[in-house]
Image (cartoon, rainbow, N blue to C red):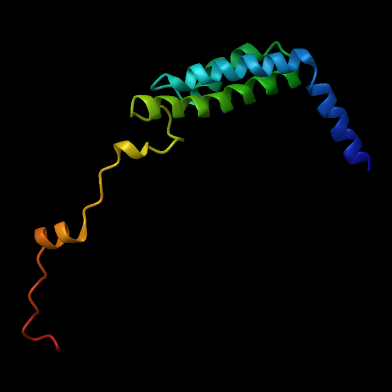
Length: 121
């Protein structure tokens, strides 16, 4: 029971208006970082980790988590709109995939191999 009580107290401490505003701002920043081709969520954390050294630990973790989640989401934006992967995390969009050939086209391009004269029928 004490574990649930501690978890509840922690959630109430993290759900202050300033922390929620900090989470929103860092997530928006992460989206901007992730939407830029060449910048990933991990690189965004590495670039902005220096800003969190002077913050309290709970606020620093909120900022880093917001940047990471926003960066992963932002990578999907460039992958969808431009057709290039913004980060390594999102898969390429379906529109950029090469169409799979039909069986008739494959049979026309690759005729069946003749059977070997020594092979069993």
